[in-house]
Length: 314
Image 1 (cartoon, helix red, strand yellow):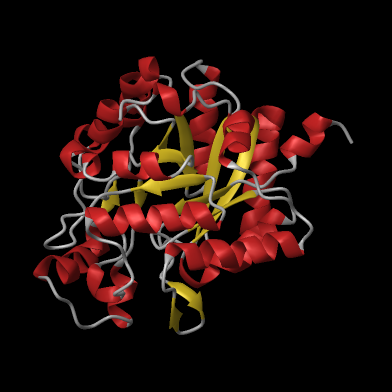
Image 2 (cartoon, helix red, strand yellow; image 1 turned 90 degrees about the horizontal axis):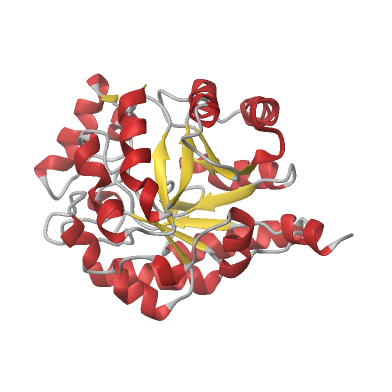
């Protein structure tokens, strides 16, 4: 096996630290303050995550905060303490405008930014069956209102993000929640607005997107293979209880994996994860049990053709 083949077999672990889906009332372990987000991110990196996917929150209410100032409170702290790749959200929260969502990545020019590849229904309201007590009024309201929520990511929105960040050298984690999102990405590839290698994050188990069945995972992989061939690097995200099962299935098929408290609050059935690092350690145990090697941050940079930490604006 050549050095190039060995490099491509390394598995990149992304850890999504806090996100916008879960609320502080759902888990006391969800990081909310800048200090907690920084500490949790560093812990995930030390556990083996090569990429840290970051959202910000209001430290008083826990509500998602997409202002650049909110991100500025922890970005330098994380960069000073770890060499992991920083990945900033442009998804923000489903009720934010695209202009609001892109601001942190436009200001800080990270190595990677997430980019949602299509509009969709985004149903969070089933969480109301599992969580009934909330600290802040906005929490129940956001979940309830998702019965009538369209997460807007039109072709114009996507192109706006691509063009806004094009001169900074930021590359993308293309989040694809359904098969049509892969075709949307192929459209932008055909127009030359995105460049290989494409880092495609296929998302399973969100109500409104593709389901978490093993056949769904295989269907997304087959479709991506047909559309992109060797021009992409595949990663998977299983929401909630699907997190580790989908990671195990897809990793055995050659995927990279994403875990973290943004995507799932759990470590076992009925048991809350105590940290992002705990989830990283668990998925690393699964990967290494499959005989797979874990990519370092610098190996991830090489695999994904990233610009390097010296070219970010923080």
